[in-house]
Amino acid sequence: MSAEQLAELSDLFVVAAVLLYVVAMVGFAIELAFGRARPGKAGAAERAEVKQPVTVGAASSGEDAGAVSETPVAASADAPAPVPPGGAVKAGTVALVLAWLGWAANLGAIVTRGLAVDRWPWGNMYEFVVAICFAAVTAFLGTQLRHNVRFLGGFVMVTAALGLGLAVKVFYTTAGPVVPALNSYWIAIHVTAAIISSGLLTLAGVSGVLYLVRGDGMSRLPARADLEKVAHRAIVFAFPLWTFAVIAGALWADRAWGRYWGWDPKEVWSFITWVAYAAYLHAKVTAGWRGKAATIVQLVAFGCLLFNLIGVNIFIDGLHSYADVP
Image: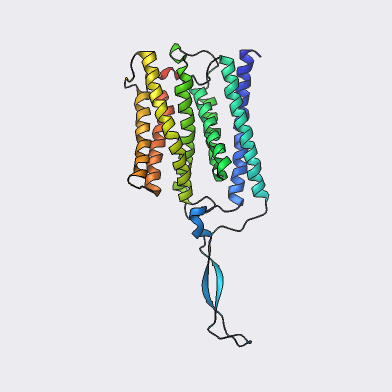
């Protein structure tokens, strides 16, 4: 296939990934809305039944009028509803299959784009956002292989679909060569680390948002402690990778521009993001921060990450303005 045909195939893969992610989102939403309620282990008290003493009147059999019967009573009005017919669970299973198909299409878009341009396919904002969406879905599906986190599926799918839509509508760049500064093996080291860590941090960000919006009436989501655990584990994995990405970026800058640090906006915001996530981990380990306070800190850090990945390239001029934003 010619480079033009490969580029067109890559674009088709992106469209297919968007459609598959959207349909998968609907399936996950059906499972979440009509399937088994998911308060999680930390929310066991919400779903446990308690035995309350109920006075039973004297029966004709001669039982004492004051006899007490242990009768199961629902712990609260927010306890999970009974499990409905298995259609919702089937919808979730189909959604998971579609998510994997969307993941494959997303991967196909990246591979064919790379073959079309004969380089690592994240040399501009369009390619970078497509790769981050892929990394976020990979983080979700990889976590799902070890832990049941299907409750996050709909929210991750909508995030990936919106990200790919943004890439196509706002950041799209015709397949072609990149500026000399990007024509380096460092793009495979620095940017790959940034993409993988960004995908994991996106999963943590989604979990953090759900933590804040989960109220007493949203018992179909896991308990807040379980959402916090998912976010924390993702950040613990991602932080060393982000640290490596920052260091590799400094080494690349020295090769490209003759200095490790130059207060370029992208460099500054990469460091600000690192400090924000370091503050979150420090607060968790040393100060014992838990719950809402820790979640707010990690969401502030996630906001720094989003501004660093997208906002800097759109609103601020700098040495990283070669991202080809139209």
